[in-house]
Each structure stands twice: as structure tokens, then as C-alpha cells.
Length: 121
Ligand SMILES: [Zn+2]
Image (cartoon, rainbow, N blue to C red):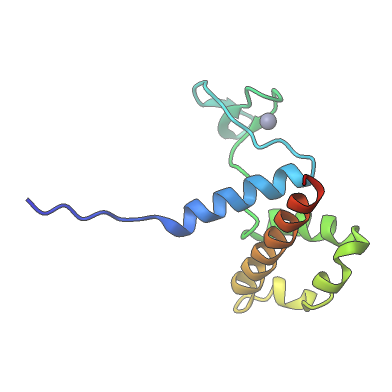
């Protein structure tokens, strides 16, 4: 019998990245052990760490979460060189947006990882 594996590398990498970025921003990477609940018009989960209702994890490839990440990075003057190397208009561009947002999030992830390693030596 032949078994083929589908390796979801993209998603896995994104999750590690987004989890790390969320913690850098002082946010909670929500986790739950409970069942889905309904709040208002949406179905989601109660986070077992912070108690907040959430529907999805942060995904910095998506425009809404990306803007939070971008604003946060803009407030860190140590990241000026990096943030200034991007054209803000590209991020919300229908065609270039997905690629620009990924490039930004991936790049920021690398910088912050390196920064954290330096600080913890
Ligand atoms: Zn939480």
C-alpha cells in the first residue's frame, strides 16, 4: 500500500511565526480545552489562559491582524529601518498585499527572533 503524506509546511510555519509575534506584542496566544460556544453572532471558544472569547488565532497574513502588527512595529524605533523598507500602500493592495504582508511578517519574525536570542545570552 502506498501512503502519501501531505506536509502542511506553510501553515505550520505561519503558526509558529504568529504565536511568537503575538507574544512579542504582549498578547495572548489563545488556547482552549473547552467546546465551541456562541457569543453574539459568532461561534468561538473561551481561552483557558486569559478567559477571553475568541474565534480564530491571530493570522498576520490577514489584513485585520496584519494592521495590528504593523502599528506595533511602527512604534518600535529600533525597527524603523525594516518598516521603512516597505511601502505601506502595498500591504492593502489587492494583488501585492498577500505577498507584502507575508514578507513583512516573516522578516519581522526573523529580526525579533535574533533580538531575543541576543538578549537571552
Ligand atoms: Zn487567551
